[in-house]
Every structure is written in structure tokens, then in C-alpha cells.
Image (cartoon, rainbow, N blue to C red; front, side, top):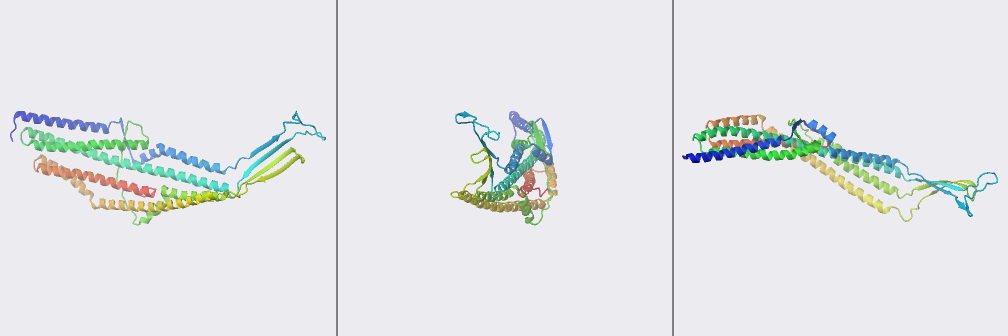
Length: 437
């Protein structure tokens, strides 16, 4: 096909506009990634330490746990005594009608009584035990909050690292295509290649640019979440410093992980403690059937029985009409309900650990099935294919097919690595401790 001079000029202007657009969008993507004034390279241990020191949700949970501990001391206190007094002010139309007795002492009349409630049936001890269990539940809830937020930090950290590697691959691949396009532009100007070939390579470049743009938006979202967890101000870009895959060697027995989870998973331990708490509440409600005693030591200065009278009394309600039966039945149902929830939590824990264990086992086998040398050889092959196309040793169709396969392979590799990291974190999350490091 022979093009007229005017047609060639039109085509060249069109191509120049498209390439200029691609360059502008790519620069905007790069600027968006690096828009922050500073880039901070943070390792995962450093991120975890800052997370524990600075996260406001953890701080709030700490205060809640401390408040529950304070209630233990409150439960230990005795009820305050009650002071009653009676003082004669006026009698027989006289104010302070006191007279001197035959022995020369004052005939002043007053009455003093102190009331002290004494709880029976071990109610005070049961309240202390309940307060201790409640404090332990709050402490476990704090651990569970830390566990969930820490897992979210890991997910954000690993995801950003994977997305940055994909982004860098797209940018690097686009730069290589742009170099190829510069050479093809010269060939097109000389009439050695068709506009179709030039536009197809340019289409690959635009496709890479679109992928980089989508990734930059996703990175911004993940970055905002991680900065919130780490309590960083705006103006910083947090770059994961390391994303090395762990060298995993799993014990053959699943029971090792299940037994560790039973001992360490905060949510499961909360359910166990809640069962204990409900049983303690039932015991306390049963104790309320026994009436409390009120002791009343008293003194009467000039009683009608004898001067300087000292006496002591006690009172207690008679459990005739109210034996606290309704509250006891309610507490019994609460115990049964919580026992069912604990049983469900036990079943859920074992199933989750087994799921996470089998998933990570599968991913390890998948990683081992593909030799690492295969990926490096494929990278070398890509460079050779790119060179061969420049030298016109392979067709455009072959190059495009190989390039798309290569791009898909890179994405699969990065996603596979991310899946393994996330599976490792999931197993640790279910167990409750970093059993795999």
C-alpha cells in the first residue's frame, strides 16, 4: 500500500498524539505514586512495632481492659456502714430541756446506731470471682482486637508490596515497548512497516498504561488503610521494605496446630471464659436466695430503760415470697446458651485451622512444583524474543502472543507469592500465635 504525503502526515500526527497521551498518563501515575513528600521504607517488624505503639483502637481497648481490672478492686470492698442518730432538740415547750441529774451528770438525751450489711452465702467472693473473669474476658478481647488489626496490617503490607512489583513491571515493560516503538517509528517513516503493526504495538503500550493506572488507584486505597493502622500523617508514602517468602516446613500432623489454637486463639478462649462467667452468675443468683444480715450496734444516752444503754440488733428479710427463682432460671438458660456457643466455637476453630492448614499445604506444593529457574529462564526468553522482533526474526503475531503470555505469567507469579503469604498469615491468625514465621 502506497500512502500519499498528506496521508502519511495525518497518520504521523495521530500516532504522535496517542504517544504523547500515553506519556502524560504514565507520568501522572508515577506522580500519584510518589505524590507524598517522603517515602518511608518500613520492614514488617518495624510496622508491627509502630502498630502496637500508635494504633488508637488498641489504645481504646487497653483502657477498656484497665476499666475491667478496676472493677475487681471495687468488688472486694465491703458495703459502707450506715449511721443513725437521734438528738433531743426540744421537749415540754423548752429548747434543749436538759437537767442535771442527782449525781451531777448532764441529763442530755441522744441515740446512736450503726448499721452494717453482712452478705451471706459467699456473695462477696462470688462477685470478686465474676469481676476477675470479666477482666480476663476484656483482656482476651484486647488480644483479639490486636490479632485482627495485625492481620489486616499484614494483608495491606503484602498487598501493597505485590501491587508495587506489578506496577514496576508494567512501567518497565512499557519503557521497553516505547523503545521498540521509537525504532518502529523510524521504520514506518521509511515505509518498511505498516501502520497496523505500529498501532498494535502501541495498543500493547496503552494496555500496560491502563494496568498501571488501575494499580496506582488500588495502591492508594491500601496505603490509606495501612497509614490509618500505623497512625501516620499524610505526606508520607509507606513502602514495604521486604516481602521475602517464608521458608515453610509444616508439621505433618494437623493436631499440632489445633492444640495450639485451643490454647492461644483469643476468640475461642473468650467463649470459654464467657461460659465460666455465666456459671458464676448462676452461682451468684442462687446465693441471693439466702438473705443478707444487717447488724445494728447502738447506744442510748438516757433511754427509758436505763442510762447509757448499749445494745445490738440484727435484721434479715424472710425468704417467704421471693426466692429469686426467676433470675436463677434465667441464669441457667444463659449457661446453656453459652455452652452451645462454646461448642460451636470449638467446632468452628478446628474447621478453620484445618482449612488454613490444607490451603497452605496446597500452595507450598504448588510453589515447589514449579522450579524457580523456570521463571528466570522465561525472563531471559522474553528479552530474546524482544530482540528477535526488533531484528524482524519473528512475526508481530508471535511477539504479541508471547508478550501477553509473559505478562500473564508475571501476574500469576506475583499473585501466587501473595497467596502464600496471605495463607501463612491466615494460619497464624487462626492459631492465635505466629506458629509459622
